[in-house]
Length: 175
Image 1 (cartoon, one colour):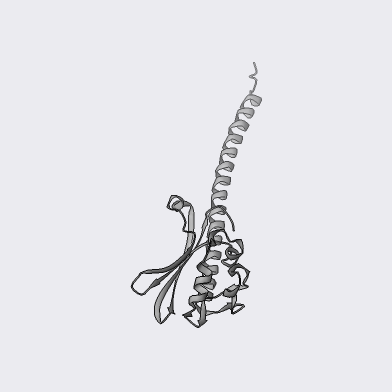
Image 2 (cartoon, helix red, strand yellow):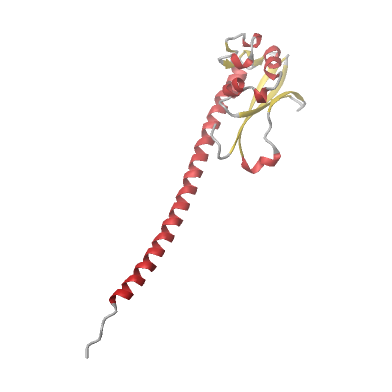
């Protein structure tokens, strides 16, 4: 008597089990890959925001802007915004012009800030707020907001002042 081999039944069970393990491993790999790619993109956007902030904050306290008399027109129409009359000496007229009105909604001004949302505060040496403008990120968005902050020192009307510049964006959204 000869025994019949059951090769077909064993083979299809093995294929189904192997395929299930492969699909599960592929799904895990894709989820991990997607998470790593998202983290990398977020880090790249944060680095870009930091670089924009460094240039912007320096420009505000070190340059007059372009054109040098931009404060006589619309702030958003200037090629670049600078608040200085000379290196680290700030102009009250330029600060007043920049800080007037609804800066949060001004698309041209936001474009000058690298396309990011921004908040700028000028404080006296003792910490008193002298001027502020822009949009603060909401405390409700705290875990979803990426920020970059720079502090610059200048002289305004003969007093030492501290300018705090914050750029921010909601994570997962490009600029």
